[in-house]
Amino acid sequence: MSEELKGKIALITGANKGIGYEIARQLGSKGATVVIGARDIARGEEAANKLRINDIDAKAIQLDVVDQKTIDSTAQQIESEFGKLDILINNAGIISDGDRLPPSQVDIQTLRHTYETNVFGVFAVTKALLPLLKKSTGGRIVNISSGLGSLTQNSDPNFEFADYKLLAYNSSKTAVNALTVLLAAELKDTPIKVNAADPGYTATDINQHQGRRTVEQGAKAAVRLATLPDDGSSGGFFDENGVLPW
Image 1 (tube, one colour):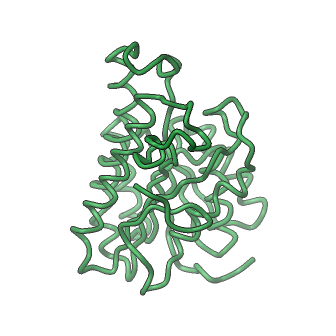
Image 2 (cartoon, helix red, strand yellow):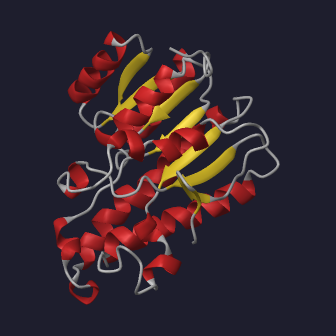
Image 3 (cartoon, rainbow, N blue to C red):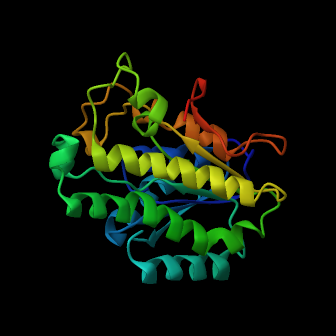
């Protein structure tokens, strides 16, 4: 167990399973106190218990990124218990079944439903937690994006995932990238760094575990960005191998 992040408080949304849980495990293994954000508090507690068995300081909190009451309650609880937040990982995200149609055939409700979680949820959580991140000596915000959100890659017929034209999901991640750039610009004169991470095609529930990468691999980019030094980059889009095109 490392003490690299001892005294740091990290909140990860959608962290009771998959990449979110693995990010929490890796940050906790570095000494951070990890707060497991979960819609279902029972599942969140189960995840936190698994981490505590491995000597990780973890607690669960009920957080549904589309429910402002739980967002506000989360901010209040973290302020009351810790007085600050050092790391925010916006991990919670969805792909709707209705998004697997050709773009012109996607129902408008599918678009709205996807954006509610993947974009508005990221914004709402970030906005609510930003005052606590400003109390950190070096706050880090990591938005979990996707290579499918890259306009450059989507317009390349030779892109490895060129056939995955999911209107709602892909464009929602493009919007997350835009939010990352704009927020980083706003915070450029503060110690807070804001970046987007692509975990790659990782085996999780969101793709019925068809992804080729493990969650350990999928968490790497986010953990690196969450632990950037003071002179690290901000406003970028990265996978574990480096910079990705917008």
